Image (cartoon, rainbow, N blue to C red; front, side, top):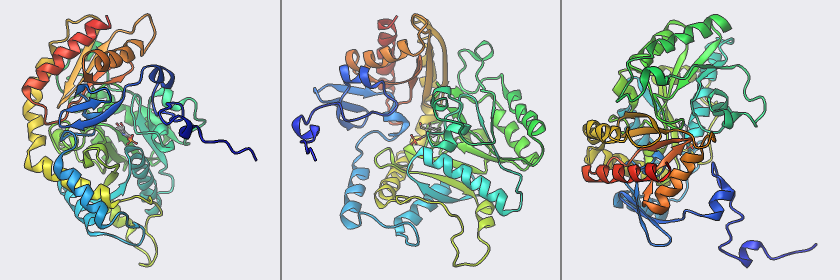
Length: 446
Ligand SMILES: Cc1ncc(COP(=O)(O)O)c(C=O)c1O
């Protein structure tokens, strides 16, 4: 056998071995954007620059970075108990965190199932929906409905109900029995909307069409993001979610809100369900639950859906689903400390109060070159730029790099849409600073 030294030993700083997720790897490795530290509203680069974070990392760090109570809670937990098996064993923080999360959710959603990411949360919710109908003897209720331009992570369930072509097209036949509602975005009717667009509630009625098309009692669940983040901040039209709820009720279809982005204050409330006055049957969450400090996701489930499973012999596992790291002690410690910060600093309310100022500030960019639309909701904005040279995504990626390299700004891009989602601790002055920098970026990539 020819044993060679591993390349990493020969050249410890070689960039080759890490196949980066959702990244243009070759472009990145020619001009890496390296982060070395973070505090509150800022990142610090390996070459010592201070970068203002207009993306909360990746929609995660709603309380800002490296908050002392979270860091301390994780450190303490790691020393006390690093790991606890979640199958047939428990630890107190898992139960406490579940209660705290359920208390933030709309009344009736009382049960929390933990996993480790938004993708797992989406797949977990879809599986619970299927198992729920099966347990009730509704054997034909197996179809899962998502929405065009929806994002529910990268598991096979999530990409099957998701509506982003590049996330689907190379991965085979996907799940059987899915279908999609139309996307809610329409440039002609909605351009430059602040908050929920007036036009578009009727698009929920497409669900009635799918019921007719596939047959009554065939649809198990509908999953939608109250605000589609990953495809460019597409805000639910006024009354759209209410209408979807009514149609689901009429046809015994479970309604799942994917709140991986909108949960924990992004839209000014603990969950978007509260903002919209619509109670779904399940809510998925991740990201903000631990402020991004430790991976965690989960599903909040309606009490009686949970109770449907709590029948039969008590020594039998009720739901054959779970993860080695469900309710990981470090994630639970981080989650509890995070929820304390959100509560003590009133960050959800803060986002709500800042929303008008933030929306006005972002709309001030509408006259910048190549801006074709701006959408705002909560502390979130999407700014569409016209594609460069007919190549979708080129201007967006150039803007991301230019923001980081030349303007000390971190933002997100989705194709040619710039997404702004600052931590909820952002000050008014920092909103001004971010907008000035974004204007500079847009001009630089004109
Ligand atoms: C709405 C939504 N669902 C699911 C996910 C997937 O989360 P994760 O990357 O943690 O698997 C994301 C990630 O951005 C998301 O925005």
